[in-house]
Image (cartoon, rainbow, N blue to C red; front, top):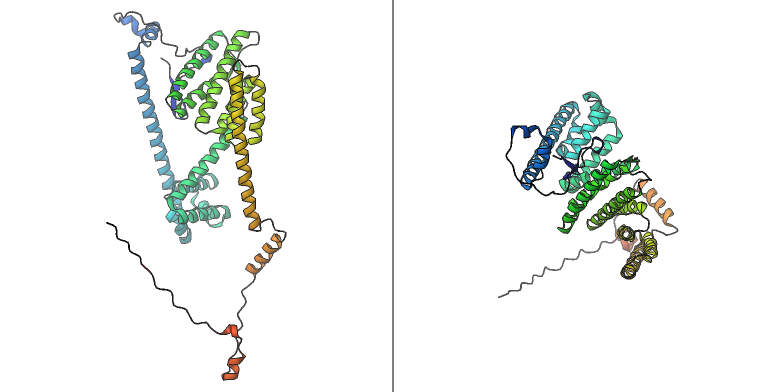
Length: 423
């Protein structure tokens, strides 16, 4: 029976090993009559292949795979917790030799996960798990000290909520760096034979049907994961140029998958993912009007109004050769109005921001000189106020300026309380 492949923690139909000829799950076939099981059937692959086509067997197998997947995820999570606990114990043991001021700095934030991970990184990677080197790094390494001070200040300012936001932000940055590095890796597709192409097309069709069903149910994340599985599988294969029909089948299937992936990403407001999928679809067919429309929507979502206007013009050119030209041009006209509104709104926001900046004097000519004077005043030592000498007598009192006379303190107005009774 086919295995289940994971994509971002979600299960979907398995691609199988195409190079070894492992078959993909195909459409449900017409069931034959039931017959009695014999001992020879246990080792018969044809019997088990026919048996797994039955609905009860497929549902039981799917339930068993879901249970195994939950168990695997639970074991992975438990292993991560145990590893984090072991790292915490090693860091705590290394901190025993640290001076008191370092302990006071770390103690209130030591339970925060991002702080634990950072301290373990310093201990394991920079100090090679040597306690003496770890203590020296905490005392003398300015980068480590500034990072710990930053953690402490953010914890005092916003508590654990602020630290969780910092952790999410750091994870997002790491993920974007990893995704960018993965995109730079060039995928060299392999030539697919007839059997492999058959399995690939069946798998892509199954992913399309399941993804469309999830999308109609409003499960956009699961639909995006399934479409991404099909895209990941098909971009690793190509068809020889002499096989024109087979090449067209693979291109059309991959094109439909990329357009569906872009639409699912737009529904989740993942505009960059939608833009990447639309660009990949246009590389397969530059005259596809749906791919141009997906690209237009993604660029508008990213705030790239100028690029969106260019995509709109290209969409109008492509629409001239489409059978549904009238409806497409009508949608283009409505989209042009939306782009004008978005462009005007962006311009108004920019003007408002610049107006506030001019009022604050950010772009003043003397701004740099004012900043230099302010910095000199802050760096200069405070001047002692001159205290006039009072020798006594009326003459000395009259000699004082009028500004030196103290004004009487005014009493604050009484507090008024207005109480209104309601029935």
